[in-house]
Length: 212
Ligand SMILES: [Zn+2]
Image 1 (cartoon, rainbow, N blue to C red):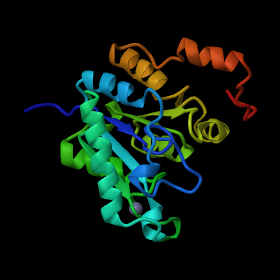
Image 2 (cartoon, rainbow, N blue to C red):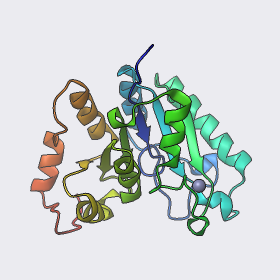
Image 3 (spheres, rainbow, N blue to C red):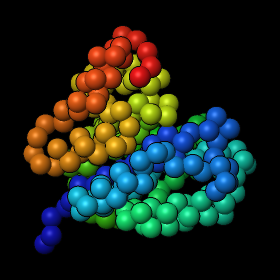
């Protein structure tokens, strides 16, 4: 019997594509974060399956149809593929806060579903996101949570610090997170990269929400 493998979970908005205050409602509004495509290509080389896990309450709120959301994801996957990367599947939660579903992050429902469908070991998995809710979904299933300080991340660092203490890692952006993941897969502890240490040196401190 083949043992379970870990996986890499990526949040979408603020990690793969730029966050928009008014939400991404069409492919025209979908803009890749600089370096994200290359980062996903490098992640793909690790051999671990990659999944996107994204909260899309805009569906429930009627701002976007499921067809359009699926179309955006198809096009996103095509671009990733053309850049040499591979995302196995996109999971999205279409529900709103008040519905108390089990899939909307901080709940780990999407990770658990992927684990069931692909026989994953979540304790050997990583989740990269720009919100405390991404880290929380990871912590709930003992995956490694990595907060990126791109997107809304800089405003979520204090929340993560208060909630999870040392049980999460921080990275400058997806590119930085990839460096950390590759180190971890080599058996080294999850450690801050030189880039992140430099950023802290520049004034980001757990007690502040100072920007990078
Ligand atoms: Zn949901």
